[in-house]
Image 1 (tube, rainbow, N blue to C red):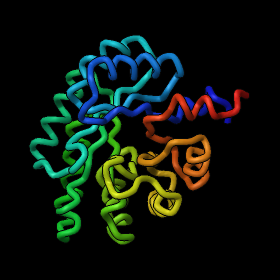
Image 2: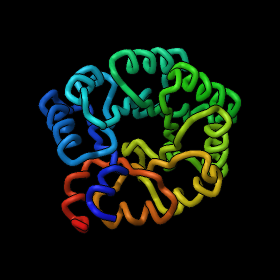
Image 3: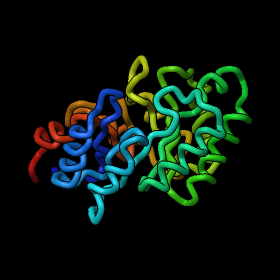
Image 4: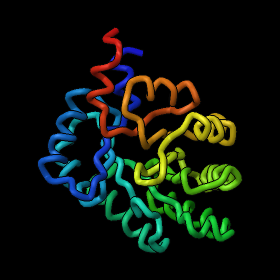
Length: 220
């Protein structure tokens, strides 16, 4: 995979609570310069990112109920609508982890479906936070995402105990087949990490070290 192809599967990420306007401006500038697939940001930066990326082929991925997923479904819907109105082109939502672990699978699936409906055709990624789930819960959440009409499953927020693993990517791919994309995120810092995630079945990756990864990749 050459650098241009690699850039197209990287979502350039800045989700730190301490991110400043200057940081976001740099993120968007790098996304354009290097040809990254998307920027992944907290919704508060959506309007600025949309302005900076206008006319460029870079998606704006707004992360909803991030990083805990513990907002009510109603608030997740409102946050989704607000992000889209402000220029987001994709939505990444954190599931209600506590509800899933409490056995309220029907509630979690309905919440995902409600966010998909609120997104009105914009792609929706479902963030599982795999470090918090057992194998059965991971499989169940993937199946819910598929039934609810999501477009992708994302492994992690990057704020959990650990991020993407090859084992989890393989499990997710075995569960969703070719019906959903898989975003590997959390702990992906090198070109080798990216290659391992792709070989395990990931479609694209989220990382805050995209520039360094590209510089470490083969030129051709």
